[in-house]
Length: 203
Picture (cartoon, helix red, strand yellow):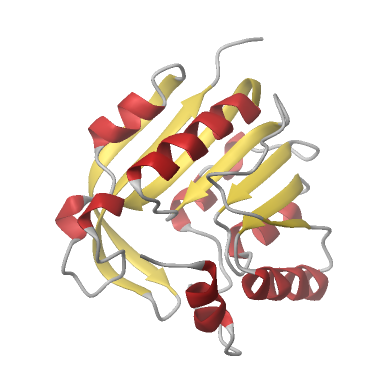
């Protein structure tokens, strides 16, 4: 099982493991974003998604358990001239602030089932009324492919898992299928993913 130290080692080099550009699915949601929205990027690693959100005027927090990754995130934010809060914590155990965010980006964060459930419950609690959750993660069909993803099948997502974990949210879209990744050296080529967008009920 991966540890924060293992990710520290991956992030220790000068290059960005998943590139400096945001995830394409998250980027496609730009028309829904407004300056001043409060955003949380969970499992944000080297900060590519959090920095992009901050660059669009969102008040953004990047959460990751790798201090090395977050150090690179802060450097990227500084280079782009944007403000970014970083929090070094395990996504499964962090004290998510109730109704603290208008957007949560869960991009390629793969956790063991119990941790995944704990993090999902925290994210749902942290969404403000009408807040959005954007998710893209690898599905079981990705297992064995070279375009990225965990090698442990239990860490992979299915549409059914997403439906179960976020059943209290309104589904705006939820897809399971093939996409083309171009995200740094670790995510290249056709990949099998689950991606979705949910809204928390409320005014």
